[in-house]
Amino acid sequence: MDGYFLDATLVKTPPVKRAAYSDRTAWILAEISRLVYEPLPPEVTVKAYMDEIDEAVRKGEYRDLVEAVIHKAMHGGVETASIVADALRQADFELLESFCVNGTEALLARLSHAEKGAGMVVLAFRGTQPSIRDVLTDIKADLIAAVDGGRAHRGFIEAYEQVRGKIEAALATHQRKIPLYITGHSLGGALAMVATRYLGNDSTGATYTYGCPRVGDDAFYQSIKTPVYRVVNAADGVPRVPFGYGLSVLLSLIRLIPLNGTRRASEFVRRTFAGYTHYGNLIFLSAPANEPDNDGFGFKGLTVTKSPNVFKVASVVFSRLILTRFKAAGGDHRMAEYSQKLFAHAQRRNLK
Image (cartoon, rainbow, N blue to C red; front, side, top):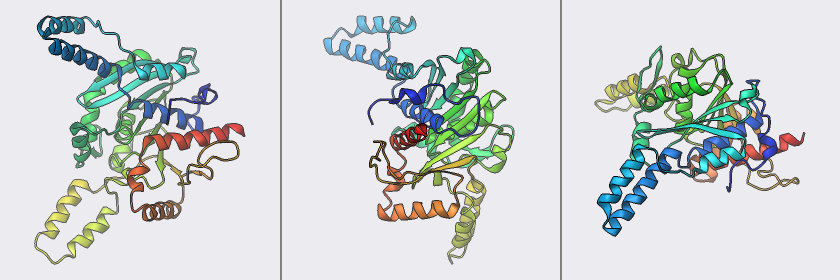
C-alpha cells in the first residue's frame, strides 16, 4: 500500500463533534495508526547521529567528529526529515510531539484548523514490532491490580507508564478542550485502551482500536465514559488473546486429566489470567478478496458490521481459518489491510 491519506476529500472536515462511529474517522485514524510505525523524529535523530559516528570511525577521525556529534546533540543541531510529519501535513494534520521511551512509541497530532474549534487532537500508539522489548511487553500477560481499580495486563500497564507523564504534559499544552481521539493497532491498540482509562475526560472524542488484544477485566473498564470502537478484521488472531471467559471451560477440562498437579496448575492459571475481557463496540470487517467494484473501489463485497451477532462472526472466522490453514490469524492482523478495507468502505459511503 503506497502513500498515506490517498483521498483528500475524506480527510476534510471529519465529523469530530459527534462521538458516534464514523467510517471516515475510522479510516483517518487507521492511517495514523499505520503511519506511527514509521520512524518518529527522535528515532530519525538518533539514526542521524549514529550514521555520523559510523562515518567518523570509518575515516579514522572518530574522536573529533564524535565530540562534534555530541555537541550537536546537546544543542539540538540535527535537522530531521520525518516521513511522519510530512504525511500528516499533507492531510492538514500537524505533528505536535512524539514519544519514544524504552520501547513505547506514540505521536500526538492536531488537525490544522483545530484552533478554530472544528478539529481534533489524535494520540496514536505504535503496535508490536520485532524487538525484544515489544515481545516482553506482550508476554507479560498476568493480570495485576491497576491504579483506581480493576486488573489489567502487566506488560501493557508497564509500557504505558513509560510515556504517561510526557503524554499528560503534552496534552496540557496542546489539547485545550479540543476533542481527543485515541488510537492504535495491536499492542498500540492495547496502549490506547489503557490511555483511554487514564486520560478519559469530557473533551475526549472517541477511541478507535485495530486488532486490539484483551487488556483487562470488567472492573478495569468500569470508569470509562469515552466511546470505544474495536475494529477487528475477519480472522485476526490477536483480538482473541489473552484467552477470555472461555478460559474457565478450558481449565475445567484440564482438571479432568488424571495426572498429578493438573488441579494445582489450572488453579494457578485461573488466579493469574482469568477475567480478561474486551470493551467497546465491535466493528467487524468481512473477508472478501481484494477485487475492485464497478466504481474502482477495492474489496468488492466487503461488509462492515457494527456489533455483529457472535454466530455470524464465528462462521466467518472459522471458515477463513480452515481455508487458509490458520494463516489468516496472522495475515488478517496486518495494519495495511485494515486501512485498505476501511478506505474502500469510506469511499463507497462517501458516494451516497
